[in-house]
Image (cartoon, rainbow, N blue to C red; front, side, top):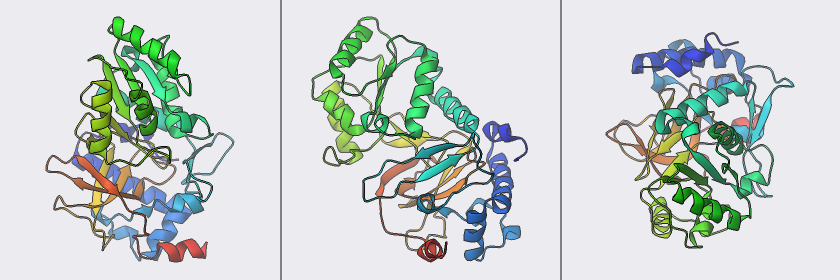
Amino acid sequence: MFNNENNVFNVASEAEFLEQSLRLFRFQYEHNSIYKQWTDLLKINPKKVNALQDIPFLPIEFFKQHKIVSSPITSKTVEFTSSSTTSQIPSTHYVNDVSLYEKSFLKCFELFYGSPKEYCILALLPNYLQRKGSSLVYMCDKLIQLSGHPFSGFFLDNSDELILKIEELKRYNQKTLLIGVSYALMDLCDKHISLNENFIVMETGGMKGRRKELLKPELHGYLKNGFQINPIHSEYGMTELLSQAYSTGNGVFQSPPWLKFLVREVDDPLHIRNNHKTGGINVIDLANIYSCAFIATKDLGIINSENKLELMGRYDHSDVRGCNLMLSEY
């Protein structure tokens, strides 16, 4: 077991973040066989890892091929899986201590939005509800329970019921979070539903093949015009992580103290950029104790001058040298 698990949520400085990251790196190098093999394949000496830029980041594709765990899988292990088409292999995140996930998303929500008890929470996540193992559904379900509002809940195809509830919430000036996948929010938008200043609209991304893919500014413009509300919020999370970042407008994401984004060179993915230019996004999620806390995603972004993340898009080719070699070996 990792000593003092709760310390990851009490990080209060860059120095403390570095200390926790290095402790977690050494723990995961010792206990996570896939991460150890990847580190060794890169010929990185763990004794010489003393800074964030020295830490090796595991390509996110490995969650499709391997069990990425830093403690034994037990009957209490929760399996979160990514959405995928029939031609894709979903990622699987084996979460051996789901209480860490609950602490992470609740503390993060409270940090940026306050207590869930202040809100009515309406979740428009049809494609996630239609399959098992969604970490986003798990998070929203807990927030809905904690909100305690009688109208809080998930909505699949019952848009008429949802519209009636929205109109009543508007009348009572109830603070409301409407969170949903992009295409479902656009579908609701097309029903000419205007909202008011008590509503927060939060998109979680993803057209899932239902509608044409849009750039974030296009999507947000569509939702702003349709709902007559500004700004549009966003949630940035993924199956392989236990923490989220939030944008309260303009597509700029803030993260809690235990989550940090770094940007790597596209052509030299082992090198971290420090020049506020576009590159691949690496994530350090200190809550991901019993999996892997150091992940190289397939997203592109910029860390701006205020040390916040701006998403720029995605790329699909394998960007880490040796990744395909290792996948073929195991």
